[in-house]
Amino acid sequence: MRTSIDLNCDLGEGIGNEVALMPLISSCNLACGGHAGDLETIDQVVQLAKQYKVGVGAHPSFPDREHFGRREMQLSFKALKDSVLE
Image 1 (tube, helix red, strand yellow):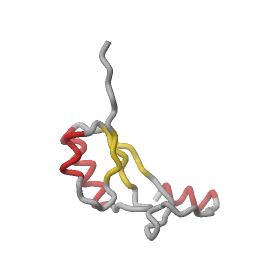
Image 2: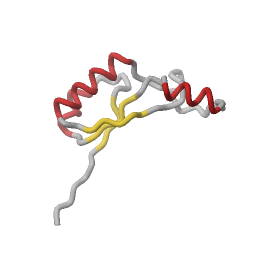
Image 3: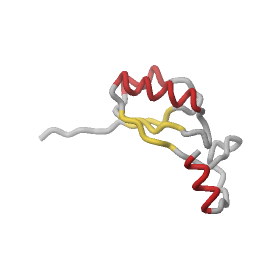
C-alpha cells in the first residue's frame, strides 16, 4: 500500500519565499488580500504553482492587514461576504 502526504504551505504573504518553497510542496493556501497579498502576488504565485504542478487553495481572512488577520473582528454577514468576494 502506498501512502501519500499533502505537504501544504501558506504563501503569498509578502515573505518572498515562494520560489524556494514551491518545488518542495504539493499544495498551497494563497493569501487573498485580507491579511496579506495583492493581485500581482496572487498571479505570480498561481503561475509558479502551475509550473510546479502544485495545487492552490484560497486563504481568505479578516480584512486586517495591521494585525495580519489575527484580530477578532465583528463583521456583519454582508461585510464578511463582501470581504471574501473581494
